[in-house]
Length: 242
Image (cartoon, rainbow, N blue to C red; front, side, top):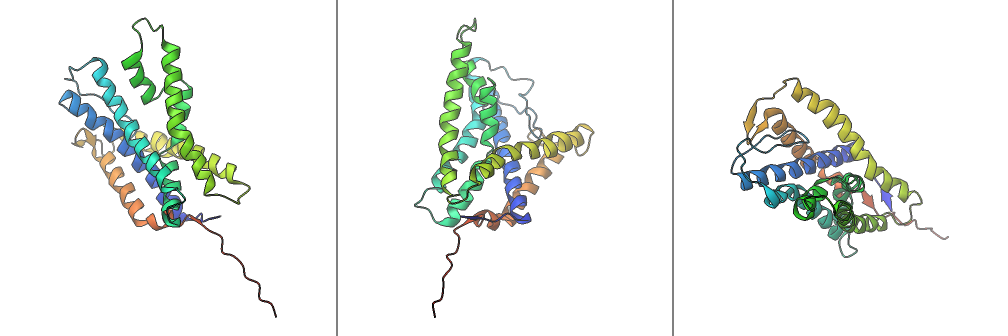
């Protein structure tokens, strides 16, 4: 298999990473509004309940599950798209969609005993005295592994014939987190905290957040062809005999 790294691909892929992160966070915000009846706030990688939310208990676990539900729907859509029954363009897009959903972040959080799924299961299953704390953490880890590992292994089949495929997969797992740290944590959050376009204009979201959301959406749309053509079959060379 041949992989086609290009500027257009990097723009499309990382825009898709940021877009999926936005969809993940918006799912939390909309679920919180559905449960509480009011909107809190929405940042770049965080959100809050509204001040007048009077709901408590296990029902709030729905809010924490809303983001992972969106993420893992996309992960398993990617798994389906990478099936051998799909055409090459679909399989190529599925590969990028999988890693744009940033599965390593969920694995890393679960191994550390954190993450949205772990928190939601603690709300639903953990005893008041925390006596089953380890059980809930292990259950969460097993669930995240089950949801994450099979699609990652399927992605390896698309890189058949490439000896460096494990390095490529490792890069796709780790690099999106480093880019997010640089762009979102160290740049966009800094701008927002400094007051740049920080006025709330829609459902608790500042103008800068909305500009970012629409910008990455447009970048994905403009450069989506590079996602379809990222992985191609190598052309067979023909030898002419005289």
